[in-house]
Image (cartoon, rainbow, N blue to C red):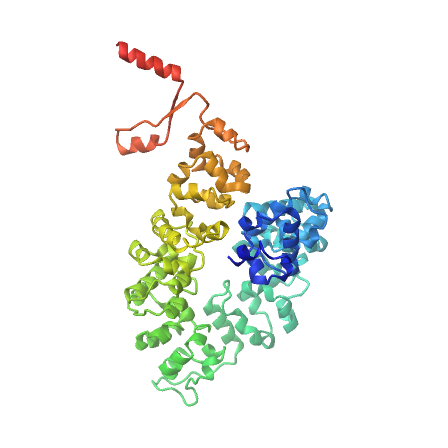
Length: 581
């Protein structure tokens, strides 16, 4: 919103602060000529602004209208993700192109997406890598693209690309297993885990997330113990494996006598409750007898991150049940939420937005998140802007109709944009008119469109036709998520007005629903006026007749939307024959 306000009046884009430049919108940038747009792109590069996929795609398309600029290196690094080797060929070699892609943030694109697969394929072809062997030199050039190589490449060439692998954001299960096998075998530049030092672990810190038991059990205790806290949330290491590992590193202890009192010196204090190794210092019985509820509550957030064994966790759960789950407990449950069943959740009573935020802040099952939100609203918690920001895109689709109806335009006006694309049509239809009222005072078209965009899946045809007159340059992804019946009611002129500079992207969707059905309803001559090669419309001289069906629902549904195309002369003949008979 700030970007839209500033872009028309500012003379020097480099004077704008980072948050304003971060708000770059394609619709607002459309008002700039080529020279001004280049100045804007250079300011974004100089301020080191990270843009999203749609922002970068828009900027790349606009800057490339007349070919790649000679000073391309002065523009944001990530723009190269939206160029092909042939585009870049005007200013450099394909190897230079691959090197630039390898240094860019490829995570702007979804892992496994067609775009990322294409970038990797082009890079392998440029570097003439036909087999599974990747040299150290080529691994350096590939950079971040190494993260997209298959597990077979890792098995064959993992030791040559270890440095690049430490920079990857995530791995598939197969990729992780391949890296684990290589590290465990010791056939890498850093040698076997038994010879690793603290500096080795520092170099491999990007791979902590996939260290497994085979690797950890070999690392010297003096090296591993100081780093143990780094492995609390390792997805490939079970909690009980980590606890078992640490126990094996400690000297054997005498078994305590079987009584119900805490042994001398074993009472869990606040200081002990902050010690990462606390779980392995206490048996199940000692934990039950020595951990008091007041200490548990005061240190709950920290304790929830510790590697308690499956045998210790029921002790923690029993003590939590005794508290009755007041707000202070619910806000600090952390990973202990995993101990709670749906029946447990249904007993909670809370109406604090802060508590809701703490409970929804981690990965939850849809059932668990739904139950938590219901307990919040059933306890009188308001669905105001603060609550909607907590619920966010991740959970907004879980709200039922009654909850959605409780949301008013004031709440939406203060809420971060909500992506409703995965929600039911009912959710979209309920929230769109509320959003329209919330943003009705925004008279600047780009600003209004930026706010209403994520809610357009519930917009009626009349509103889309009105929007088509404002030059909003709707991207094709937003267009494809419009309400089907609304989209089908648009004319080619309406569609051109909506998509603007993105109109050419419609060609790539001509065989996909609902664009395919929309094309079939248009005159081919009108489609030809769009100039993007759409085919499948009604030839001139034909009449579209939508037949009425009186058969069973199955038959009607099977033929819904199909049209009967007849020459006018044939239709006239049939009418005359009927009349004479």
